[in-house]
Image (cartoon, rainbow, N blue to C red):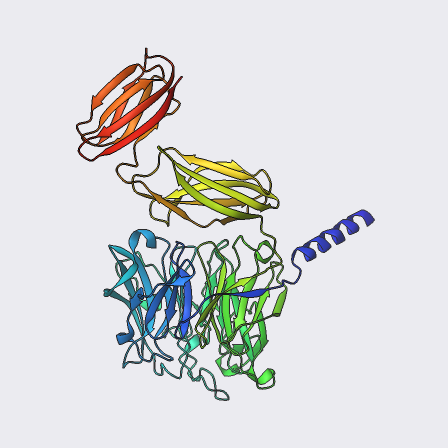
Length: 550
């Protein structure tokens, strides 16, 4: 029995050590935005930042592209407070080209959810004329009331949309006096779930209510690994709260209690329905009247599932707009409301494709990354280079640090977004140089990167290197060394090809009449090294290749 107790205590200590308090830092990425409100990704290496004034901008390789991805500034209500609130890219965006925008309509008390499309010939530009209106929510007071205003696709593929209770937003006045958040005949104070694959996804919106009892759920997020839902719901005066639902979702509608409850406390007993089950918040913290009159507005965030900072894994991060403080809930459910990190007018969190975590400052117009500098890099590169030989691309790299490191996956892409693995090279320790040959390069531009995989399965990507073959660069011999059948590829009309053995014997000569490859039968020819001469008198092209016949 004593041994069992000791074992349990050791396990508790080990788990506690794994989730010790993080030493977080803010790493600036870029600035110059005007009242940004949302940052997200589109299943590729870019970040998309929505400004409340009606523009969506792209951040690529750490810099903002000068031309906005989308500009609907003429359609919004107010460029300072009531414009674009949220954007969302579906999981199939790279194929469909569709994305969704939630904004407040010009000269109307309406919130509009619409679908737009990217331009066919330019992935960095959307078609502003492609708007398809999905759902319109008429509010009574779009400037002073609560509109909620976030969107995200869940693990189930549905589009989730949050709405505010349409109640007044001033301090000291009754919250949600009409009990909209508990009224199933109204869309206010709800979380909606739409199937965007349907012809009319916004049809019968009352039938799309997924959850109720919310006040002003400005930002929510899904755990990309588990599918769990985390909702930051701005409190009335007394309490700020984070609500939570585990995935998969099922059973009766989830009711988070507003405005019967604020946090875990009764707010308006006359709006409490006997026999109703309310879901308690995952966490609460003191709001305006309970913190000495300091403003507070919770900003819901995300569970970190990136690979760069292993100690952050599984932690849910949230913040507060007024205080600028950032806190987290660790994987054991222990809350650290103040992680010692502040970010002014923190309006939103976001993730990139790899799961790294970002945050936006509304008034300062900055985009930053949340980091934990104490986490060692599993591998650190001195360089990654791409060189071109007569028949292939060679990827060279060298490490200056390898810690509990496993291997490199060498990946290639046609468009810089969708990568496939060409091969694997195992780590040999810091200071080693590595090389990998792509013997059959793409006929146009190829994008290459390293997926660097640690011993525990976590990974990070290297920078991307690119190379292009023009029509004359593509001449190659495959396989090389070869057997009785070899291919000379990348030939052009008008080429004269001569194959000589090292003894000086001419074994083949051919005039090429069309672009393409020549399959050569080497059976019966002498073994050894051959030289292939390719000449084109019309273009002036000349090339010499070596091959070995074994």
